[in-house]
Amino acid sequence: MKTNIYDHYNDLGYLYLDNFFSEKELQKIEIIVNKFHNSWLKENHKYYQSGLINSHSITSSKFISKDERLEVFKFITQDKIFTITHSIFPDKALFLNTQLFFDPFDKNQNNYWHRDIQYTGMSIDEQKEKIKTQNVLHFRIPLKPESGIELIPATHKSWDLNEEQETRLSLNGRKPSDNLQRGKTISLNRGDLLVFSANMIHRGLYGNDRFTFDIIFCDDSPGFRNFIDLKNHPIQEELKFLNNKLF
Ligand SMILES: O=C(O)CCC(=O)C(=O)O
Image (cartoon, rainbow, N blue to C red; front, side, top):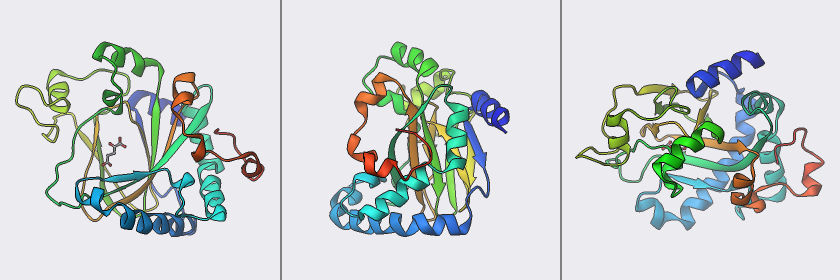
């Protein structure tokens, strides 16, 4: 299993595993995630209305209790997730954060092709070098059936075609929501898991009132460690209850 996961991911930059979570596993985490989301929406309605499509940092949120926070950490560190992070990251994976993705308030809002690394302020040449050695992974856990993610396979390691770079950077009259020839859609059902590299060219596909819980992992490198908000990580007392070390 380990070799398959690694080879598939290494070649294509993503892994789609259907029926990965049981209904029982999902229901437990869903109660907490829903509670967070309802409170978050009340407090952030203004931002939601002006275009936000995600929230983050559930584990440091005032909207959930200490026990619920521990449940989220147990979910994140469970063996079957750890097996995958361990296969993909040669040394050690580090838990970065959690995010929830939902549909935009304005149903006409366009999605956008991007690589997450394009928002870091690095030059294009630096980005080209960095994707060879540093990685950020999304574990996408849809709580509803959704159109999913469209991605360009293998671009976690290889650079854009001209048309792709122009599209995500809005150059030469192209728009980030324009269709791309090499795009591959991975639609998702409740219970599925999609692991994908945030380095690769991708976009979210809106619709069906999507609601997905994403866990983000990265390489354990000083660059990323500096970026981590430790409030999202377990404290010593909580670590005692967790099987696998991702912190
Ligand atoms: O689902 C989405 O809307 C986009 C997800 C995404 O682009 C990301 O996680 O970087």
